[in-house]
Length: 274
Image (cartoon, rainbow, N blue to C red; front, side, top):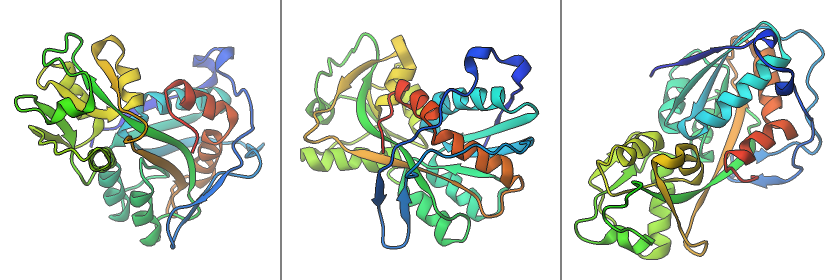
């Protein structure tokens, strides 16, 4: 898995990137009998103690654009920090963590994969920070004339999906179940960005991705909304890892994601509140 290092300092960032607020949602949700996920009842307070060093953040592929901006703002507020992101499928990242990969923070695209890490003793007290829904992405010229969800089940329409073990694949499967549709993909990809790449390259007629990925792709794809009555969503939890090499900076970064400033970046990227 390739890593994308971002060496972030206040000197390299503009004043406009500085930390803007510290409020966060006050909702609490329980997702399983073993793990409770919640957002803090009050805004997380960023520590006044110096926060330095490298923090390794394992994050779902769909968080790439939003977390890159979050990392930039975090670095603007904490001189001397080095945020290293490892973006990939949540299921694969969870496996790496449980097998001992040196990571400080895990941000998953599903509570199921976070549960695996928690049950293995790799994390505790995860908090939901965002949610996401599915959308159809097609090439700009839309050669298969896909206009609605049912078109994906038509013969001859080439569809790309995520593997069912990956959150975007599991959530897409839920959409098809809700719509009572049988869709046979021509390819099943390792994560949502790989599905999007198939669409942007014109190798498939359509892909089912997150609404945030359609927004991030801009003019490279066209988005087709899935009706709310059959659409499905997924929750994104985040946690500091038990064996985090740099717990202080890991906690500070995790707290920042939960602030109003962090929520604003996520909302701008198309994520919804948890």
